[in-house]
Image (cartoon, rainbow, N blue to C red; front, top):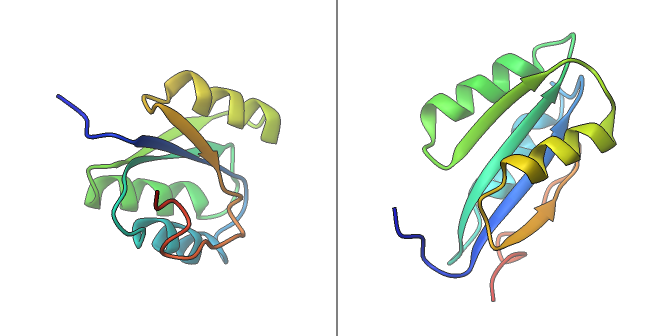
Amino acid sequence: MCLPSPFISIIVPVYNAEYYLRNCIDSILAQNSVYFELLLIDDGSKDLSGKICDEYAAKYEQVKCIHQKNEGVVAARATGILKAKGEYVYFVDADDTICPDTLAC
């Protein structure tokens, strides 16, 4: 697959964030004029976060969900970097939202 440029890998470490996660993901999916992949790294969540990640991954082609045992936010980010296919990497915390033009060039 030939990827348009710029291609950005957005990495979201997820741990027990079910109350915030949908708002976070929706804000990322609302990005204007940018091609990206969204990597949701479920770091062993004990709530519904992992299921929410799976729901979005099943619905949106650019969303990928990776489940791992709980190792902390640094390990989750490292996993995301290893799986990223983008030219650039952007980190978003699971309890944050971003504006629709945050990643616009």
